[in-house]
Image (cartoon, rainbow, N blue to C red; front, side):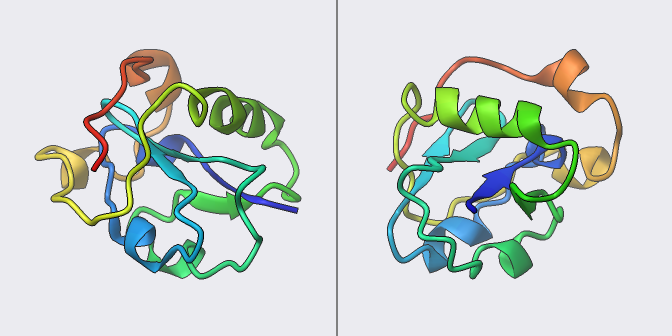
Length: 112
Protein backbone atom coordinates (compact mmCIF):
# COMPACT_ATOMS: atom_id res chain seq x y z
CA UNK A 1 0.00 0.00 0.00
CA UNK A 2 0.98 3.61 -0.55
CA UNK A 3 -0.73 6.94 -0.17
CA UNK A 4 -1.58 9.04 -3.19
CA UNK A 5 -2.81 12.55 -3.89
CA UNK A 6 -6.14 12.78 -5.72
CA UNK A 7 -7.98 15.42 -7.75
CA UNK A 8 -9.17 17.52 -4.84
CA UNK A 9 -5.61 18.84 -4.51
CA UNK A 10 -5.83 20.48 -7.94
CA UNK A 11 -6.14 24.28 -7.67
CA UNK A 12 -5.82 24.03 -3.87
CA UNK A 13 -2.29 22.71 -3.27
CA UNK A 14 -2.28 22.89 0.50
CA UNK A 15 1.17 21.83 1.68
CA UNK A 16 0.48 20.94 5.31
CA UNK A 17 1.21 17.32 4.36
CA UNK A 18 4.79 17.87 3.22
CA UNK A 19 6.04 19.03 6.62
CA UNK A 20 4.95 15.86 8.40
CA UNK A 21 6.30 13.41 5.82
CA UNK A 22 9.28 11.57 7.36
CA UNK A 23 10.70 10.51 3.97
CA UNK A 24 10.08 13.66 1.87
CA UNK A 25 8.15 11.84 -0.86
CA UNK A 26 6.02 14.79 -2.05
CA UNK A 27 6.58 16.47 -5.40
CA UNK A 28 5.18 19.80 -6.55
CA UNK A 29 3.35 20.55 -9.75
CA UNK A 30 2.09 23.93 -10.84
CA UNK A 31 -1.30 23.42 -9.19
CA UNK A 32 -1.15 20.20 -7.15
CA UNK A 33 1.15 17.83 -5.28
CA UNK A 34 1.85 14.14 -5.82
CA UNK A 35 3.45 11.39 -3.74
CA UNK A 36 6.14 9.09 -5.08
CA UNK A 37 4.65 5.64 -4.31
CA UNK A 38 8.09 4.01 -4.35
CA UNK A 39 9.34 6.37 -1.63
CA UNK A 40 6.20 6.43 0.54
CA UNK A 41 6.57 4.25 3.63
CA UNK A 42 2.81 4.02 4.18
CA UNK A 43 2.94 5.71 7.57
CA UNK A 44 -0.25 7.68 6.92
CA UNK A 45 0.72 10.83 8.83
CA UNK A 46 0.02 13.00 5.77
CA UNK A 47 -3.58 11.92 5.26
CA UNK A 48 -5.16 13.74 8.25
CA UNK A 49 -3.04 16.85 7.60
CA UNK A 50 -4.66 17.60 4.22
CA UNK A 51 -7.36 20.29 4.62
CA UNK A 52 -8.82 19.30 1.22
CA UNK A 53 -9.02 15.58 2.09
CA UNK A 54 -7.11 14.81 -1.12
CA UNK A 55 -4.75 12.12 0.23
CA UNK A 56 -5.97 8.55 0.13
CA UNK A 57 -4.53 5.04 0.48
CA UNK A 58 -4.16 3.42 -2.93
CA UNK A 59 -6.17 0.46 -1.68
CA UNK A 60 -9.41 2.45 -2.02
CA UNK A 61 -11.39 1.37 -5.09
CA UNK A 62 -11.30 3.54 -8.19
CA UNK A 63 -7.98 5.25 -7.56
CA UNK A 64 -5.90 3.45 -10.20
CA UNK A 65 -5.72 6.57 -12.37
CA UNK A 66 -4.41 8.57 -9.43
CA UNK A 67 -1.74 5.99 -8.67
CA UNK A 68 -0.57 6.41 -12.28
CA UNK A 69 -0.62 10.24 -12.03
CA UNK A 70 1.35 10.17 -8.77
CA UNK A 71 3.86 7.66 -10.14
CA UNK A 72 4.45 9.58 -13.38
CA UNK A 73 4.68 13.13 -12.06
CA UNK A 74 6.71 12.33 -8.96
CA UNK A 75 9.56 11.56 -11.38
CA UNK A 76 9.06 14.81 -13.34
CA UNK A 77 8.29 17.44 -10.70
CA UNK A 78 10.63 18.87 -8.02
CA UNK A 79 10.64 17.62 -4.45
CA UNK A 80 8.89 19.75 -1.83
CA UNK A 81 9.56 19.42 1.90
CA UNK A 82 8.58 22.83 3.26
CA UNK A 83 5.07 24.19 3.80
CA UNK A 84 4.05 27.02 1.47
CA UNK A 85 0.89 29.08 1.21
CA UNK A 86 -1.96 27.32 -0.56
CA UNK A 87 -3.09 28.65 -3.92
CA UNK A 88 -5.18 31.85 -3.68
CA UNK A 89 -8.22 30.05 -5.12
CA UNK A 90 -7.95 27.05 -2.76
CA UNK A 91 -11.12 27.66 -0.79
CA UNK A 92 -13.14 28.29 -3.95
CA UNK A 93 -11.95 25.04 -5.61
CA UNK A 94 -11.97 22.73 -2.57
CA UNK A 95 -14.54 20.02 -3.22
CA UNK A 96 -15.29 20.88 -6.86
CA UNK A 97 -15.65 17.95 -9.22
CA UNK A 98 -14.11 17.51 -12.65
CA UNK A 99 -10.92 19.33 -11.70
CA UNK A 100 -8.57 16.90 -13.45
CA UNK A 101 -10.22 17.33 -16.83
CA UNK A 102 -10.59 21.10 -16.47
CA UNK A 103 -7.50 22.25 -14.57
CA UNK A 104 -4.73 19.63 -14.24
CA UNK A 105 -1.36 21.04 -15.32
CA UNK A 106 1.68 18.97 -16.28
CA UNK A 107 3.92 21.95 -15.51
CA UNK A 108 6.23 21.59 -12.52
CA UNK A 109 6.07 23.73 -9.41
CA UNK A 110 9.09 25.45 -7.89
CA UNK A 111 9.88 22.83 -5.23
CA UNK A 112 11.96 23.85 -2.23
